[in-house]
Length: 422
Image (tube, rainbow, N blue to C red; front, top):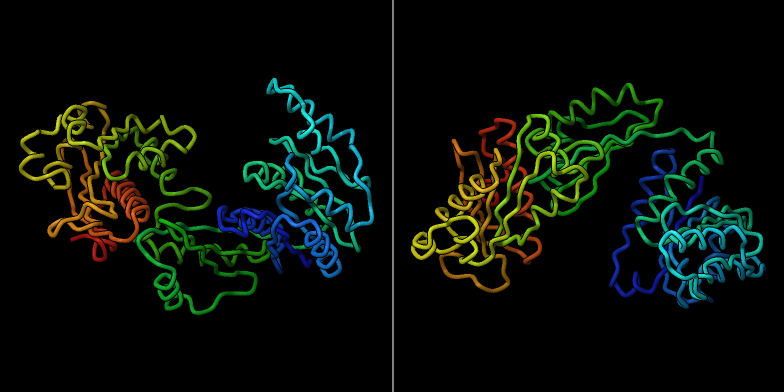
């Protein structure tokens, strides 16, 4: 099937918002064995929207439009689709009922701006939105199935799962579905991973496609597998895990922090964090996972020296003699976190994230990290460099991975130490 995306919103064109929704849509369609052939992104311009809707619908079997369903004057998708189809806008009774229920549940008045979201092309059918105020909708234009979806990521995810994927599965029942096998790597880039894989697996069988997705701080390696090739893919996936074993931090839909929390919970262990340069990022990454309290007990954000002493019991003399970014300080931060939280494992970070504050012996990007248990604490200095956010993200990922390795009883230095540890 020929599927195209039309992503709308001037914020996408200005760069103030990053388009992550097209990735969500592509991932959802991949499970059906469907792929996107083309994506167009345009701003909030009614005439341009109408022209693109007409042009794309002449060559695509399915067009998914994202964005522009809200209550404000720059939300133009319904008007544009009506004009493209030679239709008129009319208040849709079911969309209005959805709005009334949505507002009633939140005890807010249904105002004129909200009510605009019930004005849809008169021939449109609804695509239920289980989360937000704006329903999705669709119609056939030039024999193309046009589906309009909200730009809010959480709402899009709900519509994809509840409505669009099931509808397309019925629409194109003859397409062979796919499964996606994922590995999440840390401390390795795409090119190095590709090279390692190519040397061991120079060719892939029909129905199995190797793919990558670069991110920060991890890289995703995935196999897109037609269901008919699932049996052939399993031993290859096992081989892939062997090849990349030193870098794998999670598998499937999990990320690094979710995998760590599951590991700790399975072992009946708990974790505490003491953070300085990351400002609570490690704790935030952990607590974004539902049920994190089963393994995460406390996060101490001790940005100042006074708080390192007051909250964690770091010696003022140690701070005076060695400075906040030092091995003795992070070791004492771990000891304090363990004692005050009664956790089984703790990790502590202190560094110079930049862009200022570096010195000759502690340049920007210098990070000291300590981790371990009351029986044994490790410490290591890293030189990460780069922009402040990247330094913080790498620090947090290294911290979580080292805790993961400790929980697994892995005492070997990770391969990325050769790159960042000093």
